[in-house]
Length: 230
Image 1 (cartoon, one colour):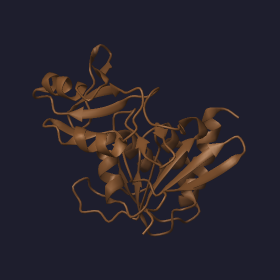
Image 2: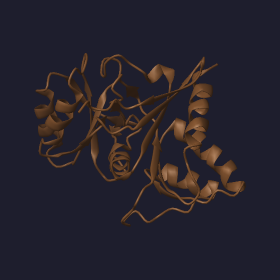
Image 3: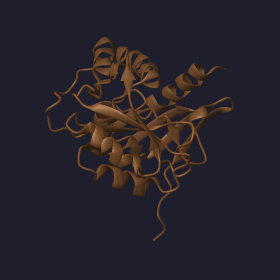
């Protein structure tokens, strides 16, 4: 089974959590394309939902699937949000934003009553960092100074490029990618980075995922976020 088949397996399982009449947050990326294909099937079978899209790409897929989208500037009550991730640790903390949609994804995830993440088994790691960078979205004004400041966190930094130019997000921001050998305290790092003036948000999603659905070669595995003991 290849990686794409495992993503589809996770996506098909995640769509089963969606109920008729819900408002659904729709993430961005290759795994979400499988979600949209499965939702299109269910909509043809009578499912009625409305969506909030986290990118122009996802908005196009939603329209093709027959999902009415709520306006970007509406006050949403999102019942459930589905999205992928680039890394997942044992506490279900995430690194997201490899595709550059982290700001909208974080807004939607925080607005959802239930945030469900779907990945293939390669995305599970014992500790965040190492092989994958942490995206940090910054405003263009003073971005080189901001990059120098975040580098003081003990990481290697580089601006994200595309076709020889600085990558620009849909919100008109830049992305700085940070490489850490390992991230032992992701919550502390998320707070430290996001309080830096000029930083809009980071791709660290700490304590946000309620469920992670993993496509594995042995089948689908569902992980629930550990609860703090009273």
